[in-house]
Length: 91
Image (cartoon, rainbow, N blue to C red; front, side):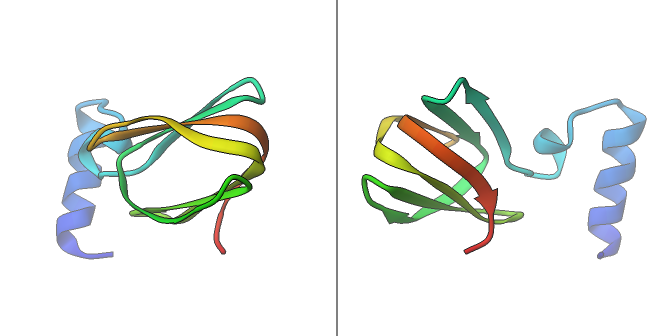
């Protein structure tokens, strides 16, 4: 870990700020089994109706399922809909 990252972590902790804000960490949330929201992503690596891979600062986020589609996308957030099977880092 670099000194810059360490300083950012200390500032975030001291100010009680969420890590995803200061450290550019991804924030992933699920709404039931039908939607996944990903904030602070970098780019989309792969997109099919059964698998979506999204590059983040923590690695590649993999979303597997059926009939997956991008419901909404902005420069900061992606909302994936469909029958979500699993979500994980790697691959």
